[in-house]
Structures are given as C-alpha cells and as structure tokens.
Image (cartoon, rainbow, N blue to C red; front, side, top):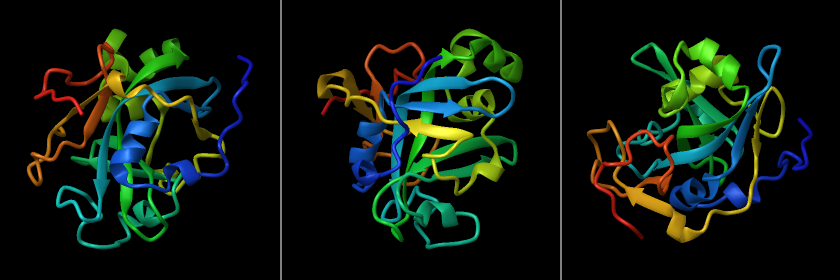
Length: 202
C-alpha cells in the first residue's frame, strides 16, 4: 500500500496538555510492521492522563516502570495490566512532565486477516479496547520508550477531527479521579469500546 503521508519526526503538535493531545490523536493512524505484514488502525478513542491526575501512572513521580511517560512527546509508553494485557500511551506534553494519551480503540484499516489471527476474534472485537488493540498490532513491552516516528511502530498524523465529531466522557475502569471528563471518541464509530458511558459533549 502506497504511503502518501510521511511519519511525523517532529512532535510539536503533541507538546501540549493531555486533553488537547487526546483529542488531536483521534483520526490519526498507528502502523505496525511487526512480523511479515503491515497492520494499521485509525485511532477512534483516547483517554488523557498526566502527573497532576490521581489516576495516572505518573502521579507519584518517575519510576523504572513509568519512565517512558516522562520522555519527549511522540514516544510510546507500553505497560501490562493484570500481568496479561498490554496497553499503550502516546507520550505528550513537555519532556520531564509525565503526560500521556491512552489509545483505547482503533478502526482496522490494513491487515485485518493478521489481526484476526493474533486475536482469535473477528469484527469489532479486534480492536475495541486498549488490550485488544495492542494484541492485534503486536505491541508489547519491548516497545516501551519507542520513538513513534520510527519503524516498526509509527504514528501518522492526520487532519484534525471536527470538534462536533468528538464525544467527551468519563474514563473507563478507574477508581481515582473517576469523574474527570478525559475520555474522547469519534461519535457513532462502531469500534469505540464503550460508547454508552455517561456521554456529554464539549
């Protein structure tokens, strides 16, 4: 598949607060060239986190586990939940400030057959959750701290989504700061993980 958008090597568009970055990442693409074939998704759901947020991994300061979240914008922060499922944040904000955007769901664009093999599921179950998405794209812990301008995992910047296409809600599966309106998704997109959760519009 011909690529007509060069991967972004300069990340000033992500050197902003977590909420702005989370909205801006909607509609952008993640391209994985892990293995023999390319897999690619369009980002349709995100959550914002930073060190001022009690729900964030960076809230209590920099550690060996969360170190990647304090890198310059445009890096990947990959971690395990429950020792089983990988999740990925795109690092945002200024270097040294623990700030990231969880990629919660994506719409498959390329390599759906390979994603189905990796997931053992088809349809929206391929990528409608952060762990599912990482499994489908083969994103694992060795990619923690990876520069997303470089293969084998790249972030492609796309045209910003119109504000009226974005729904803002509370985040999913957290207990701290659970009322914060820091989850964003594309209105009406079938690949969103939980489109029914306390929807409000900004």
